[in-house]
Image 1 (cartoon, rainbow, N blue to C red):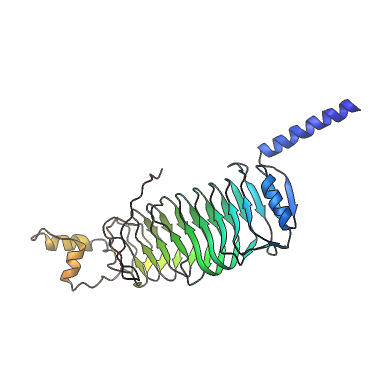
Image 2: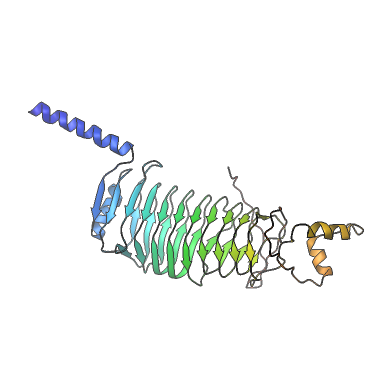
Length: 323
């Protein structure tokens, strides 16, 4: 009997190892703050931490690492709620997945310091900042932020935002200077969107209180913004289908439509000193009307942006290379 028990133990260990290697870790159900933090402290790649439909009071920290193929998952339902007065959830590790629970009343909802993490279908209510991202290669998808002082803050490279809804009048999405190479796709921002980083791609976003770009080499397709401005001393790339419905508080000139720049250049050939800004000065300095049809040619957008406080924006230098 002893040998059979010993053999069964070996088989169980091998089975557990195979399950973990293939992304099937342990399911750990938690119903109290202490159980939650203990599960975070002892989690292994592939584990799933299941939040009960309960209130979890406190600030929680995830320090361990999952793997790209076997992330550590923390999930709940619409009645699983973390209530905090500080930073509700800090991800210090890599390859975590947070999904389907609510966070209320913290100064910061989720602080992401690690890399390769994902936040999906989280709900944030009554807080300071919603999400602050300091690590690289993270994904935020289908999250909802309301009644907050700020939405999503991107402070590192190669982070992606998909289909998030930021229902606040305060700044909704802030991509900080010196960052690069991320994707913003299908987000709805009721507050302004500030893009200070470089080499980002923005597709199909709705910016109800304006999109203000001071970074270089960013690309835009299918966006709708009530007010938009772009840098003047470096390029932005219009890939078509954008609609900028009006001017915002820091607008200068709008993009020159395809063909119009060439016509203006031909008109100025005798002087040899054509630039979009000089052409506008000859027209009385008024910004041009944005065309109703989409335009797909690569253009030079206005470079200097005057902020709402009256200060001139400057184009930041991106120190990373997108691959």
